[in-house]
Image (cartoon, rainbow over all chains, first blue to last red; front, side):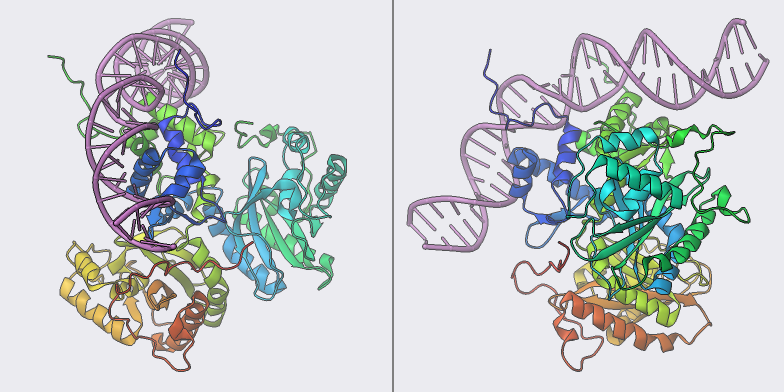
Length: 289
Length: 289
DNA sequence: CGTGAGCTTCCGTCATGCGGAAGTCAGCCT
DNA sequence: AGGCTGACTTCCGCATGACGGAAGCTCACG
């Protein structure tokens, strides 16, 4: 039989579509613009194939070519991205409230949703004189390392939670929680109090993050909102009422029943088995593992 | 001879990649979620092909499947879209200033860039009690019908401007400028005064839009910033100083030389766009990390 | 002027993407 | 019930169009 040519060891059997996605995949926060050859090398595709695919993507608007010949992601992708129901559409509803919160607290304010095992920031309002944080729109981080991620993890289904806990929890700073048992306890507390408090778990700086859940139509947690301040600048607890109030307003705007009842607990653990089956929040399934 | 099968009349000769893009293309602001069959019909692809492509896109994260089986654009696309240098990265630099402007003026504030013959909104801060406008992030509109678009058109190269003027200028409201000569005069005035003033040209409501250019590294106009208020609510002119000041601050942050000189006119067209082949004029990505 | 790196074009071959067809499943009408 | 429609999924043989090697092109550099 013929010797199969080298095949760069990792890539084999790709469909044409996967090749196209592979081209897009090589772009990242640290690689906003790349040359054709760089795209070719990183994607593992031959130069001629890359050339053709990049041409098609450019014609369509998915890639932009700058004057210097380098390629970057095109605005057509941004346009598409604005159509994500849980992304920028959610943002539209929440933004006015987030703006108010920012001005009331003078903190960085974030809105995030879950995607697979990650948290994705959907909005990020940075106060000018606040700690620098790593939360751009579209930014992706592991669930266990951020306040918003911990909220989303705490209120996810137990099966999913254990699935995440079973993976290796990456360490970002000395304070990142990497022990599953420790994290399990922290998450239980988040569920009980309705607020996550994370100190310097993602960046080494003295960042203090508070985060609360946002609920949608069937009181399912659909997103998390958080603020980040410089540790020690204010009493963290002092921010909780403002957060809770804003969260309730947004949840109401999102159609959460509980946000309309006259008095209700912020935590509101869904643990009460009585009554509606409500199908374990299987709203989005995880993909290939 | 073999009968060539029907070939649905319109679709012919598509590459595999174009088919994949065609799937993404069927989503729009009014079609956030679609069933597989709908995607198939709209894209003109057979059901089995659509099925396979949608599966690949879903595995990659470009599409999301909700519990009800409908598909929508996935967060992975939002993540990609956040990497557009002229898109969300530009937004990061400008956002703090835009926020200030919004609170100073209590108007809707927009940030927009040009893509082909359209203007794309990259940021949109909506004041709660203001006129409703059609400017979501990622929203796309013709250049001639919005304040920001007129600014971008006015400061584009003459050849490009004429190219746009030669196309049919779509009418949105009775006040939309659809006459090329009229538009040419308006644009000349925009260039001279450095500000575009558009009243109710996109939406029939009494919206008044003011827009100014933002400049980058070589004083090229790289974006436009605008505010929208209810016509008659305030004297339009009263907003110009605030706009100009903010524009200058942002231009400085973007590296525009003119924004550093002690006194300078808001207008000051660079007259000739092309010029030096010197490369890498773009790239204002700063922090992050 | 030689060299090398990046980009573009061309073309023969064969893997591979395509779509018809058959098989599920669920809802709806008679 | 029974049959019907419409949506989704799986399978497979065939023709096609995607692939990659190779050659040509354009710079920048020494």
